[in-house]
Length: 269
Ligand code: DGL
Image (tube, rainbow, N blue to C red; front, side):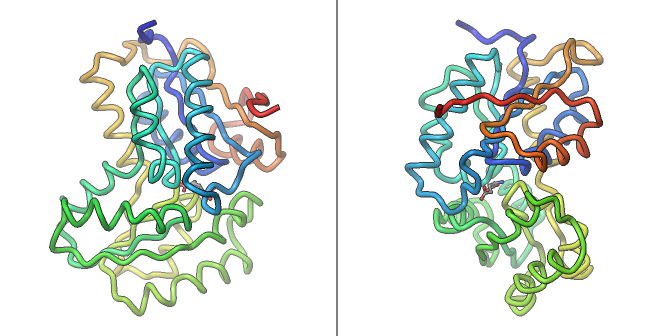
């Protein structure tokens, strides 16, 4: 069945991280309804095997399509790193990852040296260095796994000494490597971009991945004639989790206001 233009844009992540992309997309496309799935039952993805992440991703994307999604945004770098090709092959709707638009932006900026902060799954996949070797062959690329940021953010610890200690511990090696730009290659990290930016200092440009991805998705959906022409969505955005947590609800409310519509769907009951 062809996807309806009136259907929502589906997004998924392991937890709250993809809300950064969802927020940027809602700002860029105010007429669109979003259908967001946070796979809180399997969080964090960054520690899982590629096979496990692929399995979760395929099940969630199919669920979103069954619920009417007209496109899927893989709002997770870990899943984009290891599951994107499988998703494109399996889904009947357009699928977008959060890596290609960011790689294109790094190439466009022409930086000499770029650092990547991501989960263990993303860094282990080698996808950023591989893609940047093609798109920005002159840039020196160094990637660091910075997984502890994810549970800290999921705990809704968005400032204070615990976050500062984690950021500080990861900033040291990056500082020593003298990068010009730092890609926050995990969709959770932009939630604490201010703290990371303050620690790295003004000489390191932080790439705002949610905005870059939202711009790319908006343009592509426009070209595919999959955008609604209205100024506001017909129904509120829908948030779904695989395991309810108060922290998810609290952070989603911070991003989208008090009255979010949240429910639990048990894909793995
Ligand atoms: N937000 C995700 C990412 O972009 C996943 C983090 C995790 O669950 O480990 O990689």
